[in-house]
Length: 174
Image (tube, rainbow, N blue to C red; front, top):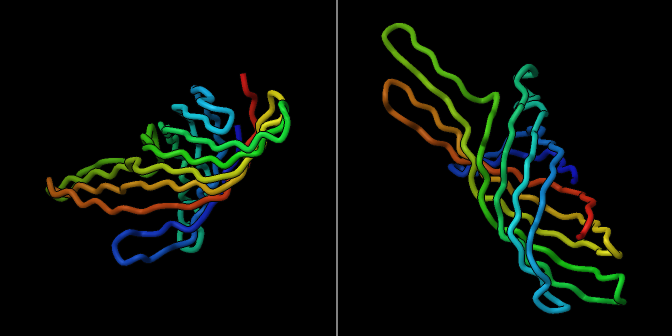
């Protein structure tokens, strides 16, 4: 389990960024095997809940209230110091699914209909850590891409964005 800080939302078209609070607690599980004393390969799944302000500069009322489910491949490179102590570097690559979000809705009026939805996208995690006996400690950077989809009178417009966040986590190794 861990926590990732908020960051800037960077839009793919034009590269503009805006301040946001995409802070989120998360829990994840990775199942795999140590293929050598130096390497690990596993598959993981997690749950992350972003709760901060979407746009604190202009709209202080809208919160993310977003539940993302990342699914990823995890690779670790270990440097065993002793049988009980091993620092490592880690990379996780995959995709996330947006299970629910406050950004979304639909309606109609004046002969028009509209619908908004937040979708997941690429998920990456890059970090360092330490295994001590059955305990795991890690820190690094999480990258979350997402797609803001708006449909108005049958025409859909998708805008892609991403957030980079610093994370810390602790866990147990079985």
